[in-house]
Image (cartoon, rainbow, N blue to C red; front, side, top):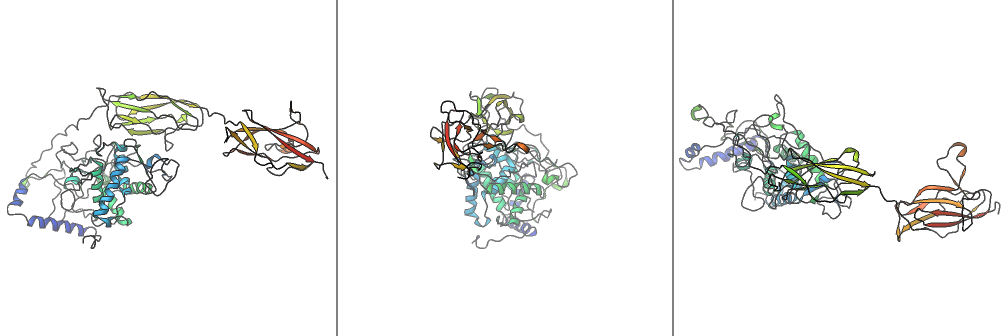
Length: 597
């Protein structure tokens, strides 16, 4: 029935009125004394009006590459395109993260089909909020290996939200922080939504609602985006949904660019192998009237996490004023006013230390393979390091940056000279596939622990020159007799040959063509008969006879068409000798008839 009468709610006052009526009805239905009992319990203050889901904190501003993604060989593309050419690295989504987005889409398609939620929208938001859970640094259940926390929502460049969860999710007892792969503010997760039960969801069916779990966070984000009767296939509803996450036009454009990119195709990559974005929007400075809503800044892994104000539910617009029956956001400092207007009963407590995490003190080279490649090809192995704590145990979820000297010519995917990846559960960080440049030489790849003082690890890399293409046989592609009249040229492209090596066509093979005498034992360059012209000669020398041509090369199919062959006044049978550096020889007969015959 709900689907039959589904409609888009009017923005603004309509959603506010509905929320107020629901709250009033719930209050009126309570037994006598229930209201007083509830009031006696200490309730944390709700977020201030106009707070977006992620608190307006920092987000990644990197934009997708211009070329459309195409799955690499052997992968299973998830978009509309397919092919064998490897696409940009950014098109790879960590397996568990990708599964979470698709599972959320499927669940919402079953419960709210009119929303038309595409999983690529969740991927676009996940990219901007946390770099796809820091490149897929999650365990088998989808929970992040290390907490992903945004900066304190203390009003300095962001919304001001006093602690609402007692540090349960973010470990902070003074202010809220955005939490997890989709960066929910604790108050949004546990108290948001039209019925104040929170937007938190159980996406993996384990009976828990954990904002640090990508399955739970993706489903919760999907519900939030769909709320208010939205149809995300309509551009206006899509824009409002994204702006409800972070009320910033720049944020909207960035998410839409990734959404469009992922809709062109993606492919699955192993967890922990995703390349992190690198650029973040900084917090707005004091005096900017949008700094509490659109700021951005630090923190590798920032994401959604703020509760929508009850006067600005998803699908509605904000009036900036609390509706009837709503809680007032409290004093500007985030404390609750005491009964009777006296001094606040809530005193800020010192910020506790964040949850203990293994401290990375060293990076160790993993694997003894040397990094070698032939010019223009991929290296046979990738640089790999192991992050360790003081006890030598692996440290998971740590960002490691691999850097190349620009002069090396080698590049990571996307033509990058630097990439950041996170360590997996075994503490290993492996750089993406490295491709050598066109010139031989040696250089150093450096691995550093981002934000840590651990010594860097260097890898020596060697690029070898391409071996010269080989051919052990030359043959004509036609057995037609080659004839011309003295003083007249042979037919255009009269001589075509193919080169093979061990029975296979040989591309790029250098060939030398020489007009020779008919001495079978000592053939030397002939001084009369057929000849070529020098294509680079100019002026009086452009018609000079050339009877030896070098620099000829077979094409990608092992074929070579010789330049036009001219004749002088001498008739007879002449020989054209074709040779390669590997000793392949082909002799072609050229017959020249007398002039006037």
